[in-house]
Length: 153
Image (cartoon, rainbow, N blue to C red):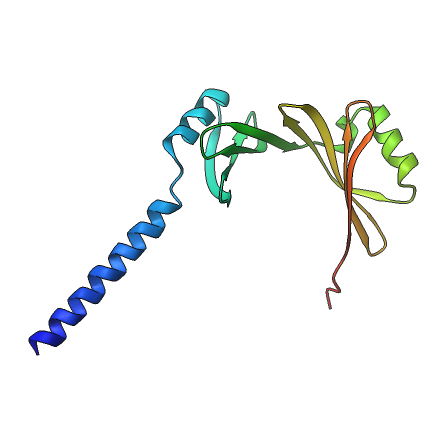
């Protein structure tokens, strides 16, 4: 009986250690939190998520607008994004988008700020074709990625 109790105790200790280790592994590094607080001192309701092995993403509100910001594990800021209304997108950007992608409807528009500048990111759709398109502030297409929608039946 002592062996059984000892064995169960060891299993509990091992499981607790594993749970603590994985919880600790996904804990936002303090250097990332500090960099975030410095860049966004007025941010409210911050939720953190591990984006990948080297990057953390914060979702938060500032001035009643929802944002997301990405930081490397060493605290280096990578990108900030927030959704914008189509009416708030400059006319030269919309004209470029419409002339390069006739018949597509804008599903979502975002501004992406990086160390390389500000960009407009759009999710556009035409029939079953969905595309993500990024334009710079002069209306030049920087990136486009086409995806075929899955059937939703």
